[in-house]
Length: 359
Image 1 (cartoon, helix red, strand yellow):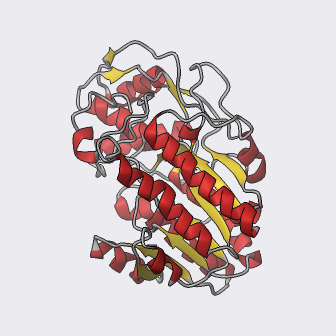
Image 2 (cartoon, helix red, strand yellow):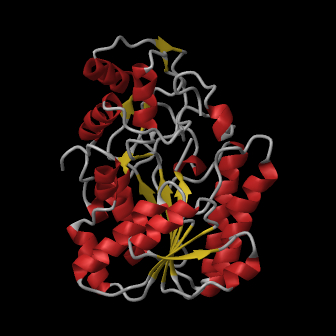
Image 3 (cartoon, one colour):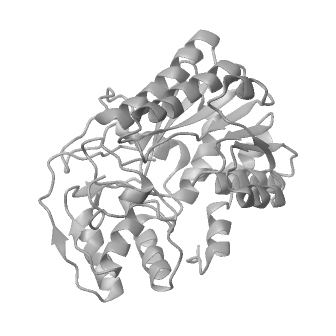
């Protein structure tokens, strides 16, 4: 794959179906309903599903559901052949009125702004999933979750596997475990096949842990070493894996860690960005003793290695920033280890990728 030169090319790459995803669409029965389609992941995922169906020569309805506070996002989806429905997923009656689909992908959730508005976080991360799980009992569901439900581990330790017991830190991570428990409860009650999709740091060049570190260096700020190691994955790989997981749902729910195959060093990645930019790199802070690390061996065995590796992602990110590529201003806050997440506006006051977490 060539590095994307602009946002049109980037969107094309993010929504490019892999051959195995096209083959999946030939086998998969039913339409696809994507809940929370207007977020960071949803638009490219919806277009990916549509393109995979077209390449497979099959007809499926791809339906995106969201509040669509930005009408332009809805227009773009519809222009790509995706049906859209406006719905407040916190309203049980509105959820019940949605069309029943064989395949449901649940993307809705709240991360930023948790501090000071914890009740809303619990509504979005627990009540909304309960609304959905009660309605779509006859569907396959891939439900987005986060690696933050796992305990923190030493920076040089193996990552948490799907067998690692949950031990969330802070209200956000606990609410995410609550989301999983809602899907788990209704899966067991109704036999709904589910995958709990534990994604840890997706990168799409306009956001993600690698752009966070890179922009810190580009802007001449010091890089915090509070979180000395991390995992990440190209969003295009995460998108394809989302659809592929529809064939791996089960009751009780299956758990799937989704991230890159390696543990990356914050210092080494920062130094590489410094080399690519021709800029000095400054560091601040003491390396922390505990971090979020996930082991994605299970998904690697099922789906193979990522099509875009970390080395390529670093180069693409550097090229994107040098060329003035857009930043979505949605920092990952990957360095937070105390479970406290500020809102988007306050996030801009952080120092160089200062402590903060998932999808």
